[in-house]
Length: 555
Image 1 (tube, rainbow, N blue to C red):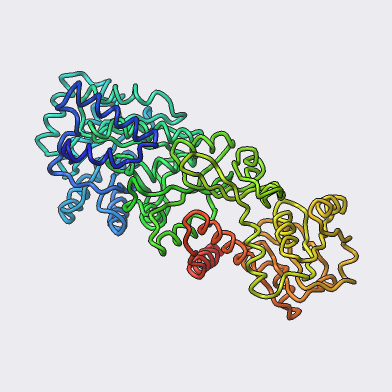
Image 2 (cartoon, one colour; image 1 turned 180 degrees about the horizontal axis):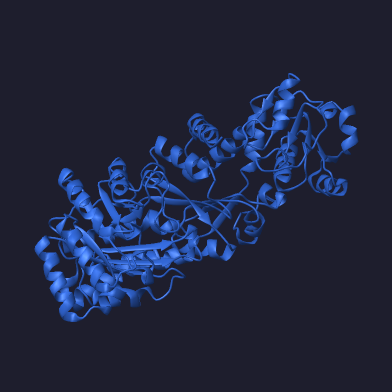
């Protein structure tokens, strides 16, 4: 527990430009003036919970304890979801033995009734009885939903709480909204009416901006309460990762086998290793990779590995984005220091950039008409870059001189635009080949390159052939964009990186042609992003290693 003096120091260390911190500072001042004795959270001398509570669910009591043993590898703070068991009372003797064998752990017992989002079908009296027996079995905290607290008669609740106190168990009162994020302050008021040891408010995120409401709630109440705030769902990841950084007592996580007890719950090992949740502080710079879908993006792994390797206090999170306005709200208000963006955001974000003109020439990003990297200045202005260009140019520069090189580009979409403009700028002679020839002609005219019909490929020799189409990507059933007799190049570059060896690369290898895989393109564009965001050289070898390992793990 922080003393008022320490808490004030912590708040003043927060950047004053951050609206969350300014809001919390004002709240703290108002709280201290109106009720000095409530300016800090009440003490919990016996409890030392960590930042991550791993939720344990199982079909049988023995399985629950077995899973709890496994979860201890990640955290010594566990939640036992008794309501997932057909007969919760049968687990209590095993739970008592488990707690007796592991006296250093902190345990929460939860037995949420079905009408409040859980699985327990008994009445209120049975719920209260089970939670009390869990306390007597050694659980340090019991979770009672606010609806049950409100349903209980005052005398009944007072007697129950006295028994909890006798067992030395703390009370957490929780609120869950499984449909939206709204009315959070009212939920806190309902909970605080019962003066619990912990206040837990859980909503459902329908947008990225819903995370902001949860983080504001945490910051507004963390100085006077032991508060936990979470937004469920894929869009709510920010709240799960940054909740403790904002002042939450802890966050909930799934077991590392991925068995989640709530939508969007993240594995404990992921929070620890990928997001380094225990090292995040108010000085941590925040980055995101935005798209829809975005769950399987390798960018958080690649960049968080690079941040760790180069001792950069930063974290990247995947951002499930439905609209550009939603993303821009989070960029401004969280705030984010930088974002990697995917289609269609690459083009939609262009009008919002504050890129300076370079003399009388139009910057390359504007000429391409797409931006995949945002850097946010201290003044809130967004500068955009297209590092897809670097992802193409850098691997090729390591192998040949680009000026005067004859390069065929298959495709005329967004990835092709970055490749074509970047290569033309390096002095290469670029030929665009596309199934719809008119599209290739239009891009060639804009980029000062040339269009070539597919049937002409076999009669033309190239230094490099680059595939920018999704053909060959995992799950894509389209045929190769080129026939075997048209593979007339000294080097083949496939921008597809999943699978690692695409059908095109396999064909090239069979013919003895050197290849560049899409992994190298992905890593090089990411390396350029790292340099833009940090001003430091990127650890390219380490970035390449973790991306390749993860792709091989995924099969």
